[in-house]
Length: 254
Image (cartoon, rainbow, N blue to C red; front, top):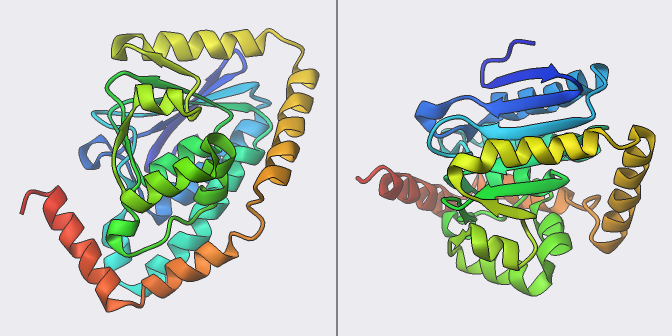
C-alpha cells in the first residue's frame, strides 16, 4: 500500500509501519495521522500478527506538526480529533503494535508510542512532552495512556515540567520494555515480534483485549473529548500561538 508520509509492508505475518519524512524529522501532521489510522485497517485486512512501528532518519518523530497549529485554527481543531483517532486506531488494531524508537520522540510521538502494546528504545532516544511550553494541553488520549503506564505522579512531572527524559529513565518508570544499543534496535524489535508471532494468535489477541480492557478501567480515554476541546480552544488563543511560534524559532535556532 502506498502512502505519502509512511512506508508500510508485511512479510510472514509481521508488518512494518515506518514514519517516512526524515528531512522533517517525521512530523505528525493531519495527513500523517490519517494515514497511520488507515494503515492499521490495512494491517487488519492482511491479518498481521505484529506490526513494528519506527521512524526513518535521525528521529522517531518530532510530534504534531506545529506549523499546522499556528497557521489556522481549523488545522488545530482537526489535529485534536484526528490525533485521538490515530492513537485509538493503533491501540485497537488486532495486531500487537511494537514501537521501535530512536533519536528524538516528541509530544504526539510520545502519544503514538504510548498507544503501542510494547516498546523498545535505543539508547540514544530522548523523549519530551513540550505541550505546556506551547500553551496547549497534551491531547490525543495522551494523559490517560501515560497514567496507565507510568502513574499519575510521573505523568504530572513530565507533562508539567516539559523536561526531556532518556531511554533508561523511560524503562525505569515503566514506559518502555527494553533498551538496546542503536545498532541493535531493529534486531531486538524483530526478535520480539517473532516471539509473539509463533504463539497461538487467538490467545495473543485475547490477551491484548484483556489488557486493553483492564487499562481502560484504570484510566479511560473515553472522556478525551475534554483534551480535544482544550486543544481546539488553544488554537484560538493568541498567547498559545505566540508560544508555539517561539518554540519553533528556538527549535530552528533562530
